[in-house]
Image 1 (cartoon, rainbow, N blue to C red):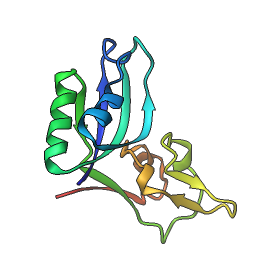
Image 2 (cartoon, helix red, strand yellow; image 1 turned 90 degrees about the vertical axis):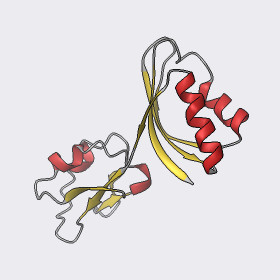
Image 3 (cartoon, rainbow, N blue to C red; image 1 turned 180 degrees about the horizontal axis):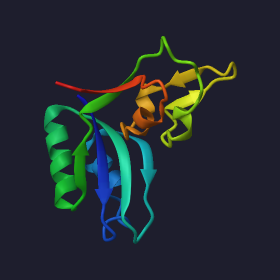
Image 4 (cartoon, helix red, strand yellow; image 1 turned 90 degrees about the horizontal axis):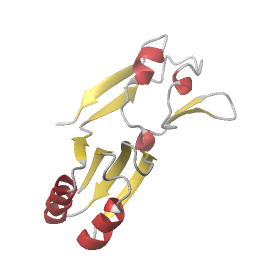
Length: 135
């Protein structure tokens, strides 16, 4: 099973190899999509964890024991691309790099990079972005 999470690390945990230990001790796959972590400062990471149900449960328990705040990403962004005029307004707010203009000045949306920050929803002048929730 694959699940996406936003992990928030306190100032006391950013200097510890928590994600490394998570991988080694629980034999799971962690894909770090985006991270902003500096030792001694509060930090965040957007990750996708790939594990069996049992391994996932152990991994989440391990994170909680180490005071890492978990936020499940249970929603996704949908782009109604047909009426898009490729103005690029959404790309200017997409710090995750999910929205980019290609060499032909056409908008490309890489959903695997989207962290569902919802900034594109407000940035789009044609209101082409929608937030959907997983069941």
